[in-house]
Length: 156
Image (cartoon, rainbow, N blue to C red; front, side):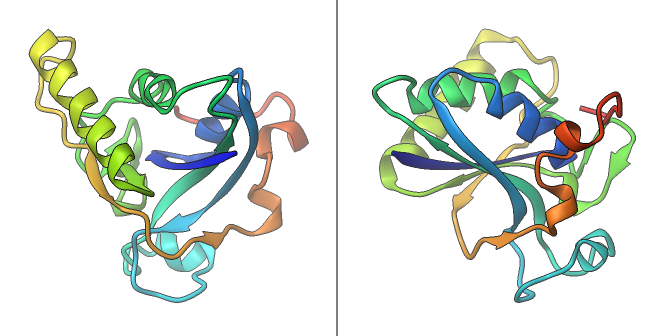
């Protein structure tokens, strides 16, 4: 198994979309990219910890590639919005790829370059490509949120 970490706005919808992909064996929502140890949702939403709401994806590289995960990531949110997704705003909603190794970093940068050259997005892609740092699992009520709250919608 391999690990990938992405931030693309409200983590509820992002987790649901990644969990549905072939080759994804598990997902977990949490916080990364900030300075506070073991932050709470309330602290992250205060926009003072520097964390992003993110999804950690465990996947089988024999069934899906990191590049396929990147394609899904860029297709499920607007990577041109700075520190927001739709009506959700703040640094916790930023677009980011948190790479776990040099190959993931290269793949993420190549995907951004390819999307930029293709002209798919009219605005500049502002997705951060940064090393994966400490991971803090979000509170249990955030895990698999849509499975627990059928019919609820998130702005993703």
